[in-house]
Image (cartoon, rainbow, N blue to C red):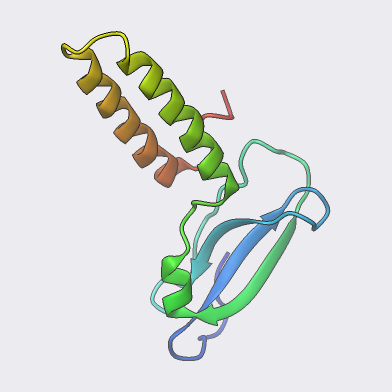
Length: 118
């Protein structure tokens, strides 16, 4: 997506996607005058969708992350797995699980729902 004309100062277009006909939207990202274009992942759902666009204050958009319900769900599963695996021993296993969990969160921020596409 890209902006065809400048936004008002201190404004951003916030983008959301609904794949169920418009009742549940998830945050995709936002466009600003300093970053007027972007490619946003839809996830693994190949069906059509509805894009919601709202003009928001830039400060509001900066507080939005990909931490919608999907991130909370994925992070909950990852945290449970990390705690379970970490319970099997002290040694280096706990550190490895922490490193994996950190990698998972960073990858989710970059690639969205990568864990669903497998």
